[in-house]
Image (cartoon, rainbow, N blue to C red; front, side, top):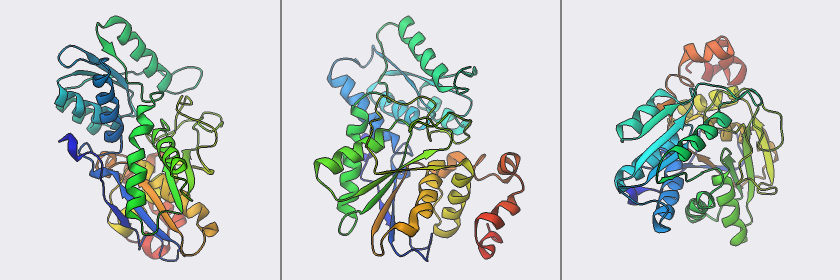
Length: 329
């Protein structure tokens, strides 16, 4: 099963923005066995820990903080290798992700306290991980936020993109959270001296690129604490997008391309639309779509949830998409 991680398909999006002068391709990371790009990181993190003797199958306990997707990837890999896994999540992790982790044998702990300084759950999740590590024999934290094996796993992601795009990519749009994907793709591009502009897509309210923290609704996009993997200069440009941008463009993708993708997919597509007027004609642009949309059916794709956070759904579509499209969204 773990041999199916990676080598995900890349497809051209010809309907998402028919007026675009550039070519737009999407790397579909939902085709990983656990349903997201985090399968790549999880496998690399666990294999590295086993090869270094930090994790011993049948004896060690892996403990990690996750908003959901990395937790699923680790639950899958740990189950395969016979390693006990404890995942610390918060209430923003959707129920399906938690259910999948538990079905794979993970022990899931949900923290419910918000950090008073940042107003976010992540610092509380990290503190709880440290508490579990201190009180558990043979416990190990892969630490996706600081472990260099995380970005190393995405050298393959970028290599696959370069091999699949005719003539190679001119622009890469990458959502940010742990900064593993961004850093790994940037490292590979620089090592290979590729003439590709890398656009980091962050959430409004995320602190990764120096902004003040603010509430966010989409799990796995942005961060309340700047990850240790972050480095200045990884991206040629940074675009911040709102939760509403994510919702509208996820639905636009589903309506126009029949691709049901997760929240950060809407983020990178919103960024493409934001800067599209500056992209030269004929350029090849790639967006990485990190996960599948089935895990967002009760949020992004649910009219009642959208209305409760953003107002009348019909009004939103009329304001953000063409009228003819809004009528059928």
